[in-house]
Image (cartoon, rainbow over all chains, first blue to last red; front, side, top):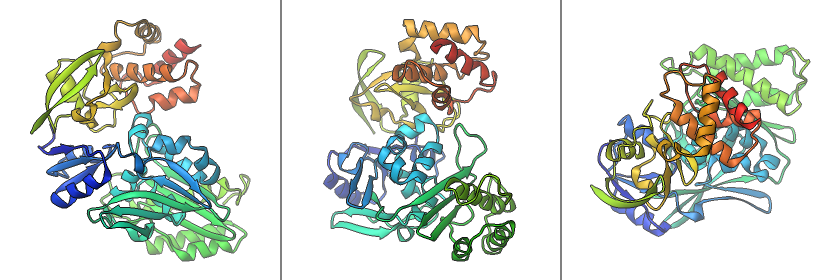
Length: 284
Length: 152
């Protein structure tokens, strides 16, 4: 058994805000795939769980003009199977396909993945690279943040008696993108490290996961990518910048700092191969 | 703190007084004595506790018992007298896909759910369906072969 708590399943979003305001120790639960593990490990012991998984207004993927909106309660399976995502935001399809396992993808939600703000979260680096906008809803209405502002530290996001409503991504420009990760096993695991790349026109945004407290970008790296062609020396230079600027924690159970630093650059090459920037034959 | 829930488990209606903090797995094993469902890791990582919730496989150790209020659950006990189970069982035996058997109920539920979604799963679909299930005896190859034996 988990440690005791009260359990509420509100039927509308207004009720959720009232419960949150009245119960400061309440915790929102959706898919529960992260939270219930934390409860079991007693890393969290809320007095109340507010189950929001049936709030239909937070579900689904839609396209309005040049924006794709992913509702916070959209399951990872729905993202993986959405043609809107696969056609426009392929890197999110890649992240969904590598996420957990079949059973977990069915229950876990993109909103849960974002608000838990874990350093290696599957949707961390791709959403940062896409400059996603986060829509938050509370009693006072809707607030929008760039994801980099919303997700500001390990396990910390800007929510104050509010719910994450949707994740919005601008697709007015053509997006080339890719996501890769390394995990110990393929079937069901968390990322040891992960990397996402987005290219619009000739602008690159690359983000690296688990090497810092939040998805990490170094503008110098992205500027080097702009000055093609890619040679062995290009990546040696990128590796040097990464080595000098990040210091992954040595206490990680999954990998050493040295391994992580080298692997994120290796994943960057995979991302560049994916979008056709470097050929399979090129030895970099 | 507890509350009543209404649910259908293996085709039978139940009205149960359930503590909020009880997991679905605990409800099945400890309250209803449906001990065919196993607890492995207790963290949703191993798949041993897989049951069907409204026909979709879930990890019952990370589902609250209260989450099945108004829904339907099928456990290994609910399938063991079906022709589908006989088919899965025969294939597992033929391919030596069972050794200690602890993970088997979870695998069987995942295979049943896979066959319910698609009669002719591809190799990749089989791997995807079973990818989150751990088996420390057989090394997976025989389990994969067992499923292929059913679909070929």
